[in-house]
Image: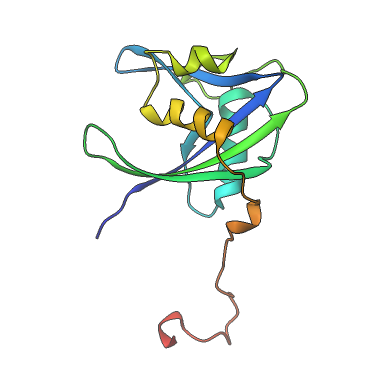
Length: 158
């Protein structure tokens, strides 16, 4: 069975600057949006909120869904990356909670788009999508949970 990695990422913008997190990957400093894997028993939006806090110390809820990317990394790892947007009224100080994050930067889009230290090509693509693409209401993503009552029909009854 095909089992891609499911990840979330949030493009955070304030005052025309974009927030990136810096972490070491294979001995090299890389930039990414606040991002990470979906965990068991959480929705995509909950994962985005959690990753934003863990990687930046910021508490916020994305305001829009931007895009779903299907990507095969150079090592052939398959990913489904759900991209969100969060616009803040001003740049805020960051306090990464995750030990893997070395620092956060507020940067102009041109600096990110031209950087050679991006974690993946999706980092620059996400900035471009934020700038050019449509925003979708969060309601396009829904989390359906089967009722856990004893009298509910078995899932295989459908």
